Image 1: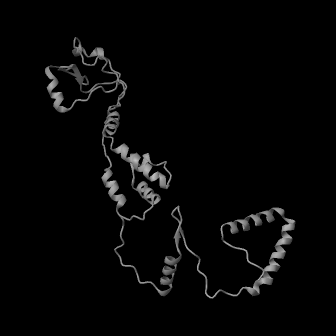
Image 2: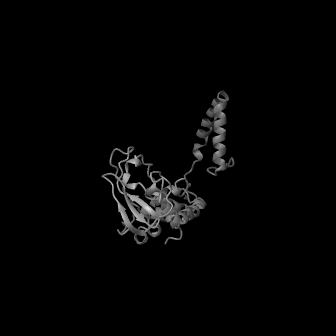
Image 3: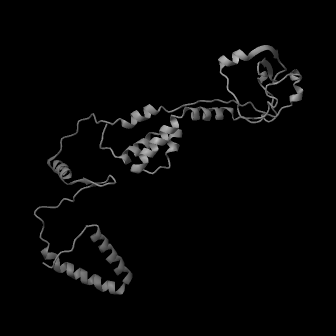
Length: 256
């Protein structure tokens, strides 16, 4: 594990590995040092809450439309004490029974109607209905398929910490390339926001610029004349030069 990796780099890599619901949870978090821990806690709290995940999947599976059917035509159901009197309504699920529990509540008693009519089965809870129904609000046959794919949080963490390694040996550096590498190692630094700063290389010995003084003064005199005619340009020039000084891109020198 590379301990020099910053929080910003970790969060950027983490967001690039996420897909689906996990990606939506942290999509609006900006790439900052503080948001890495926040994103990690959001993902951990959500995907370790198994009850919330199960409830989410069950809600999608049981969100069915209210059926519209002529229940009076189902004469085979007359006189039965139904477990759910309003069985055509799309009410919330009150209880889920596994196959092991369902088998223990079954009793003798089975009533069947015609095609596209429900089958009644007697249980300790009352008569329950199942089977196909010829609903007037569903003229076409609808197939529902539920597939639940949960991302393995352990696999995501493993991919997050894995570092790619270059297996191909690097080509030997030329003398000029080696000088560049050495100059970078000797002069570079890193800011608080993760950016690299490298000193600009200069020729040694420094060139003699003394002969350019008169040419520079002539250009400066021409600029001053132009500034007297264009106050807006003069103001922009002063702001630009002042910003250069504030950023330490240049420093004033004496007349010598």
